[in-house]
Length: 283
Image (cartoon, rainbow, N blue to C red; front, side):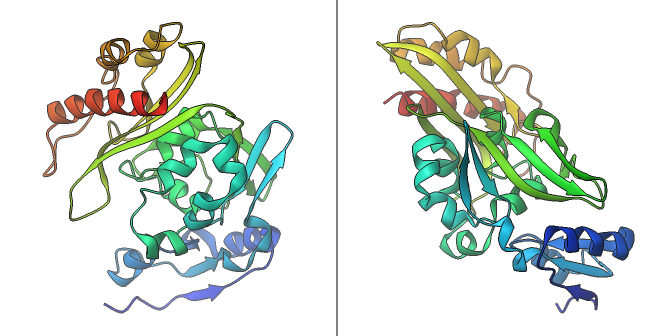
């Protein structure tokens, strides 16, 4: 279908984009990579009066090091995320998860910030950012603010970004020397996760000294498998230890039942995939 008519602006700075959103009112929408938004327009599931295209804002692209943090601009494409040396060295989990997003064409156009702002519970990048305690930098009419990952995802397709605000960057602590793995179970016909597990593990002297586990599509928002993390830390690294700890993966989750899987099957997948992800992350 052909989208309904709308006004279009392509600002060249964050300040211009924020002002355009304010001028556009409640019906103004942001275009990032467009991999979710364009289909919504074509199907006329959305009818914005104004589209604000962030593609012309150079400051929203790229990866940089700021002290003990790695900062990724919200308009950095998935393709660039997977190839960036800083991320591969210090935040390997986000690189590994991004490699599983859709296909090559989507990864060349889609953006990290756009995917996170979309907040699809089956999307693959929210759980890693939660597991890694990322921070989200948001700009609006009142200036810039930072939102912790635990507060950013609020419900299905809902985040802490206000109606006149823009996600500008994501800050990650450094996890240098940690192993990482993103284990994903999906239908062959599509890339959306039925369930997926993001695991970052630090192993020293044969023992697990720290672990971060995030779950995809086990609730309306990404969740931490804190029971697994607690069961792993301080234990000698072994397959038996990991498999036993993984049995706590579904604790505190609320998976749905749909055409792809029942809630009980999703709970089973969470346990199996958590075991696989942790073992792979630990090498």
